[in-house]
Image 1 (tube, rainbow, N blue to C red):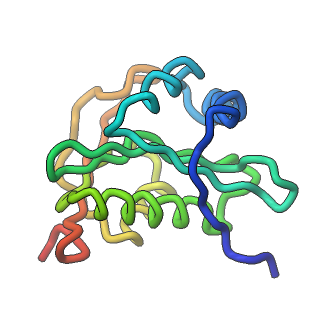
Image 2 (image 1 turned 180 degrees about the vertical axis):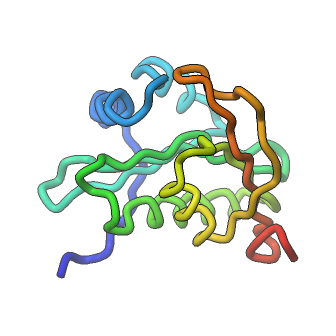
Image 3 (image 1 turned 30 degrees about the vertical axis):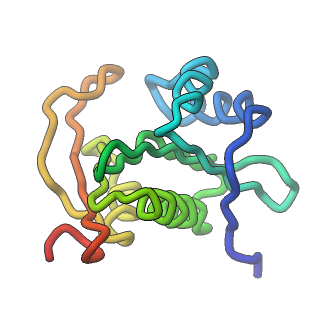
Length: 156
């Protein structure tokens, strides 16, 4: 049995691999340059998980402004899904956001992405609302979800 995934800080030399995974899993992917610009901001931080062979298999990017956090991007290589990579990334991002004073965390996810919605629910996120036609390629609604870090989930 493989050991549980361990997240680490995302590095500049990871961004080519991040962009590769991004292009393979999202229909409207961020570019390597977009990641570079985003991660250059003091309020944004990224994390990665490597596979047993040392190759990056998942990443997450989050931000904090005042007392609110946001998960901006999260992806796991399709062949590595179902092994706890997304869960490990969410956990480390929530720890980072909590340490920086976030009381509540938000995210958007494609309404049709049931697997991701399930992972977010397992982490304690609850639906907040729908953003109509939020995604462009293809056009689709986003489910906005939230988590109250002070209580563990937004329902409390």
